[in-house]
Length: 406
Image (cartoon, rainbow, N blue to C red):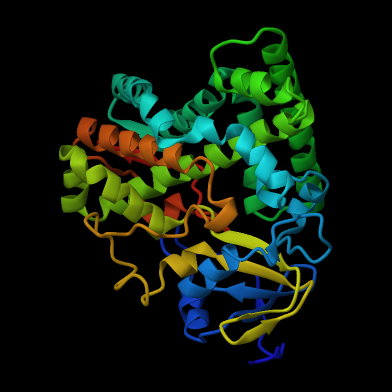
């Protein structure tokens, strides 16, 4: 069993320079065969996990905690420190995690996602119609990806997307500041303010559903769990918050960056636009390649050996889903896009108890989005070089503007 030496610590997170390819450092670190010693922005030591087998082992092991209030939990950016006082479904452990997930999981089944497919299709067609009506160019982020992702996420809660557009505009400005690393203290304060603003919105939303229930997901959760006393209103408010935030950004990123990656492979893009049966495999493959939520923090609750490395109780671990999903031991030629690849089993949605609640909704939504865009917009292409579109490298793949023509 190897013990820790901290002579070769890496800075975590590692900034990516391409939206659809992992940093080159991931390959080097993965070849070391063991978790890599690293340090966070504040000097806190952390273990960085990049191999697929080790990542899956950590994510599925209850000896690694997701509890953000634990002093050893590794928050990898100063501007995210405000979340320590705001534990959410993805940053808590059983039994609290189990009880809250149980309350909403029935609203996120594959059957429920498929029931929304016709409405998703209508929304996608409506957005493309609007783009075409304005000419032969558009910003794919503002005119398609953001409203589509926001709409289907709101539908999963039984709410109206237009009610949250003001909040999304404010959060976009904050993300721009965060990406440029300007005044992180102020950005952190802005994030806390936005958390509180969105929490207040969802508080009113839950109160309304309690007083005037309807045939929608949150009304059903209120009736079955809140009224029965097994889930508090405050817990439901936080569930609404995390479902919205965790659904909006990754779906938006996957639409834009997925389209960008497909545009580099015209034959595969054509297959996606002309053969609906290719869409499920294409979505799995693109999700594996891009891994929109790369970094998954954990903290060891006891001494655990991972890949021959001893991780001691209280030490933080950051799992890179992107690095794991590009492990050639699991996916031969991992950087090659192949919409026929059997890429299931990837870690883009996490693994274990914290596997993404909205994975089914995301997959169906992406099938609809890619299909509509490549079917309706022949000759779709970027209006700028890739390096100009992705002009603010960050920790997670995300694009704030994407001019396209067709």
